[in-house]
Image (tube, helix red, strand yellow):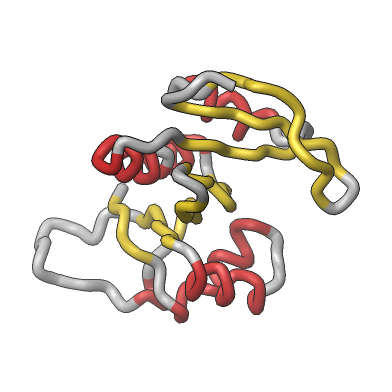
Length: 142
């Protein structure tokens, strides 16, 4: 699995992965750091597949605000999500910042992935589109 920066032309594929509007995904790519997990490009590391030919298996969007890395979107296959969580954690480690993720309570596979990555549940988050969320932190308690 390869991980790279997302570009505008990925918006439609991200929308399919997240079951979200393409315009929202395009805005995400423009406003946040977004990394995508794709199939391995093949044996030749100098060959770039056009974005339209790559299969995107997942993505993570994150930004920094008030001295904390916030994971704002996370979606994909179990393997992709596990690999993609490394991206904001690596950034946060370099910058010596804690990380926070808000996950919808019904997204059990994402909750399991962040817990396996070492995040701790620190409480309830705000409601999002009428759904309960759970607040997770890495690198800082409560």
